[in-house]
Image (cartoon, rainbow, N blue to C red; front, side, top):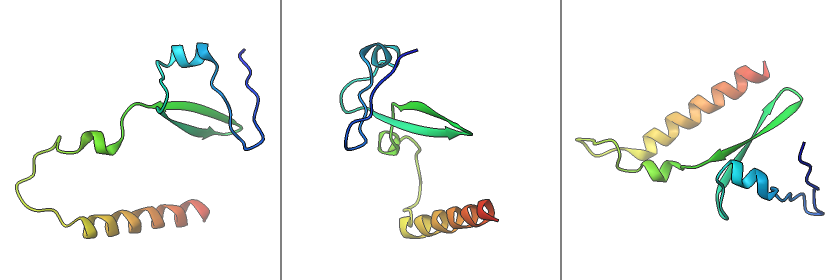
Length: 83
């Protein structure tokens, strides 16, 4: 078991061994995933911007419409989860 202390501003330091296991460098991003009473640390090696241009499209995209669809879908999921 490896233990780290929470600092006064809620920050933690990932111990060197953990960073090595996960091949993490300064500036890398992590996600904290809640699973019941546990929280799992998950490295995020890529962002959506890393995928930009990876799928060819033939027509211009209406990003405002796409964002609105995502907002509506996420809102509906939140409502369903709270019910």
